[in-house]
Structures are given as C-alpha cells and as structure tokens.
Length: 452
Image (cartoon, rainbow, N blue to C red; front, side, top):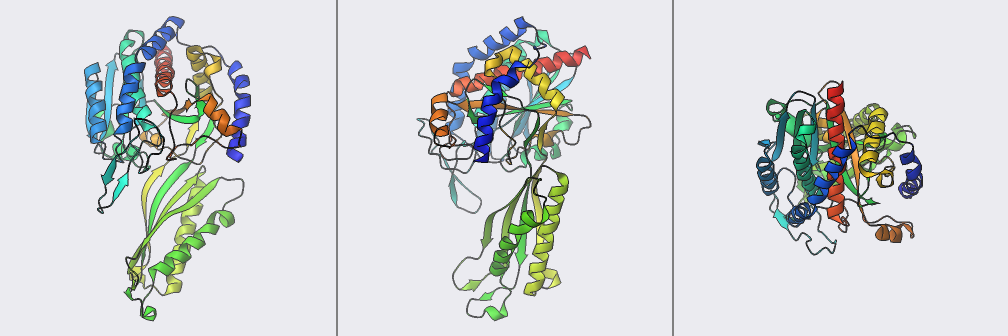
C-alpha cells in the first residue's frame, strides 16, 4: 500500500510540479517537426510492436529481434554493429563535430505465461538448456522499448540538419538478468562505438496514461546483485543420514538465516531487499544429494548497504557449513552473476529534461514520476567506467485512465511489469510519445553540447 499511497500523492502533485518548469531549449519549429515525425510513424511502429510482442525472445537469445532491428537501422542509413554480447547491437550516426550521446533500449522478454487477453498475445514456448520448456512473453514492455528505438532512429536521421555530433543507439539483450549491459561493455562495445558523455534510457509503466512521460530527480531504481550460493555436502542413502552431510538441511538453514540479514544488519532508514528466489537441491525421494544451489537477489541504493549484505551472506553461509561439519575442501562458494548500479537522475539534469519535455509535449502530459522502487535497471553499467558520463532515466506512460481509475478505486494498481496480465494500453500512442519525448531530449542535448 505504501507504493499506492505514494503514487496517489505523486498524481496529485503532478500538475504543480509541471507548472514550475522552464521553457524548452529547442526551437518551436524543430519541436513541431519532431512531433509530426513521431506521429506519422505510429501505424508502422505499432505493427512492429505487435510483431515483437507475439514473438518474444529471452536473455541473450534475441536472434530474430536483433536481426529485425539491425535491418531497419541499416535501411535508415546507420552504421550497425551486431553480435555484441551475442545478440546486442549498436548503431552509429556520425553527424559532424559535437558531443557523443547514447540512447539505449532493452529488447529481451521474460519466462512468463501471458494472460493479457490481447489478440496478439504471445503463445511462445522455448526449450531451455536443461530440456525443460518455458512460456515466454513481453511482460515488461521491452517490445515497446525496441519499437521506439526505431522511431527515434528515424526522427534523428530526418532532423540531422538541425544538430551535430554522434548519436549511438544501443539494442541490449539480457536486461532481465541484470547482465546484458555489462556483457556488451565486456565484449568490446567501445571498440566499435565512441564513448558517450550522456546516456538516456526509458521504460514503460502502466501507472501513467499512454501519451504521458515523467523524469523525476533523485533515486529511481535500486542497485541489484544476482548470486549463486553453492553448498557441497556428502551424499548418501536416505536411510543413513548419519553418514552424510545434507545440503538440503544446510540450504534450509541458510534460507532462514538470510531472513534476518536486513532486519538485524541494515539501518531501518536504508532500503534493502534480500530474496532467495530458488533452492535447487536433490532429485528424488531416497537420495541425500551431494550439492545444492541457492539463487539470491539483492536490492540496495547505498554501496555500504550492499557490502554489509554480501559480508553477512558469506558469514552466515560459512558458519552453517562449519556447524554441519563440512570439510575445508568442500566449503560453500558464492558466485556473482549480475550487478547493476542504482538508477539516479541528477537534479540539475532532470530539471533541464523536464523543461525540454514541457516544450515538446505540453505541461499536462508531464507526470511527476513514480516513487523510488526496489526494481532495477542495468543500463547505467554501459557508462559505469566512463568518467563524467551522465545518465537520464525517462518513465513512459502505458496505461489507460479508465483502467487505472477502476483499480485505484479498490486500493490496487493495474497489473504491473512482470505480471502475466501486464499489458500496454494504446501502445501506438505510448510508443510515439516516447519517440517524441526522447528525440526532443536528444536534440536538446546535442544543441546544448555544441553551445558549450
């Protein structure tokens, strides 16, 4: 309920916030051209969105999605680099002297069975490495993100007489693993494209109406870690547990011990979440297994809080193993699998962005932004190693007022991201609004960079 109450407060405050913003820096004629270019693309971008929605792909396995995006970007005239971190891509438009600015869209889906009721809902299943199958759907809206990347690409190409510099567009895999951005950097992204001074990314949410956007200053999304805890015992027959060291019992003890890490180690004023998402141990009824794995997810805003959680996980895990009699050569191991910095909009940059958006869309279409959430986004990792690079996170509305009103009247929210019933209402409007808003932000950044 705290999120809902915070959202209600934000909705009430929205008009007040928007009215105090300065006017945009880009000329009115250019802003109007951007709006028309975005609107003219709505039928085609919605067609692309529906195609992507019905054919989602997981993690790094985005071969069809990446091919579709690369083909369209090449047709527009971009220099396109593919195969970065398997199926990531980067498109470059060199347009004279000026700053290097990057816009990133994530393209991956989720292992969620869709229950949206949409006529183009995903029915797709994929086979995993272990032979099992999973339903796949775009339950987080990355299909819309991919579509608006293409829309932005066309707007920036069509307005290149109005700006100068280098635009880099990134289509990223594996955001849902909190791994794709860093994987692209590690796979030589910056051997192929120049390093940006500004990185912009955007995400759709059903809590705002389609046709609106928000850029809120301060903390937006938490930092995140994905880690595996590997427990090794001594296996044996289920009838003789006295001759074993049972990883099932160690895992159960560890899960319970982890529950007090946040409540007894982290100050109440510091947001933190520790989730054990899976315990994989054992195969059958009468065999005590040799090994087991716990899959953990951490969320945090402060790096000191992160380190406290990591230290406590190691301490508790090793202690449980010692208490169980695990020999030194079989002590638990902890493997870090994914890491993302918190998403934070610097106040000065957010204020300037809001001024640009008011000029592009009008005050009534600028929302105040959702309260900070413990969900995560890994796009800041694209520039984490670049000195003085700034990031900006834009929230895009994807809801419908009547649907939102129905849910809010009962004290609930519409099905949010990752829910099987998640859906973007009026996706064409949501996508073209994102195209218009983010193109305006890019143009303003190029113009400001050249003015400096």
